[in-house]
Image 1 (cartoon, rainbow, N blue to C red):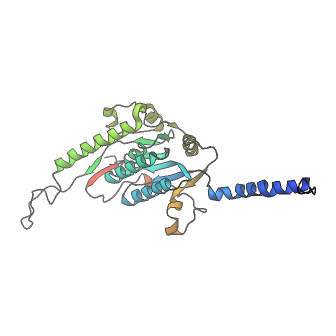
Image 2 (image 1 turned 135 degrees about the vertical axis):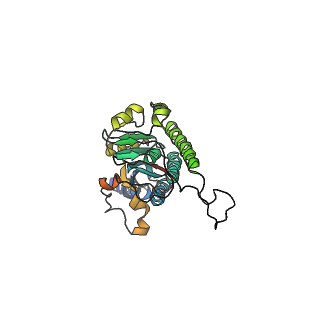
Image 3 (image 1 turned 120 degrees about the horizontal axis):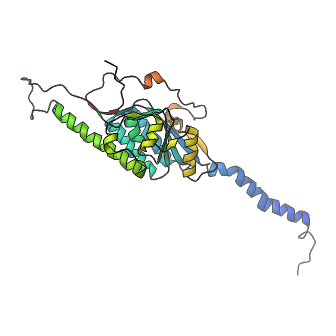
Length: 291
């Protein structure tokens, strides 16, 4: 039997053992936890100005970043856009639906979410705006091709090969896309939608108050409140709101995101009429000049 020296029962020794075995690992874990398990974040994507191939690619890249970053638990899309090309708007709509399978997505309309921009918003879980926001314009604009003509020196295997079809055919395609657009809004809004198919198909633009009455939005709150709502939907209490643009493109631009500031909105550019758009289908709102 080993004689008891008294040291094994020394209070000082027990305290030292407790500090080494319990306190030190616990303290180390508390300080190391943020780097090992990052704090949850709500990612912010800003959809500003026209929707076209480049802006759609940047938008989708940010959604992909959100899906691949385990710290991103929800996304808020801040919208100031008149819409744009039909194909790019539809691509963005589908990508929002894909991301929505992984996390809550909320749309926050600032000044304008019209046509293709509202198409994108319709894919989110919830849509919020301000009383003075411009919302809607659910429809299609078609820039028609040149009228069909005969070119004797041009040989084609079909009468419309050089034109893509008749002007009447473009009109019918626009009508089909309008139906698809309205159906997408109806699917996204579900039972919250009050406006009828016929009313929405008029392609009117509404203020936030009327948009809420029609069920096009879920309420009128600020962007910060929309971020808080997205965090609530994700079950977050302690979180950080982060801009996804500098995080997504940090390697290309050398920007860590710490000094990033969202671009200031140019209202004149936002409402400007487009110029030199090629023939095609557009989900875009345009204020035509009075004649």
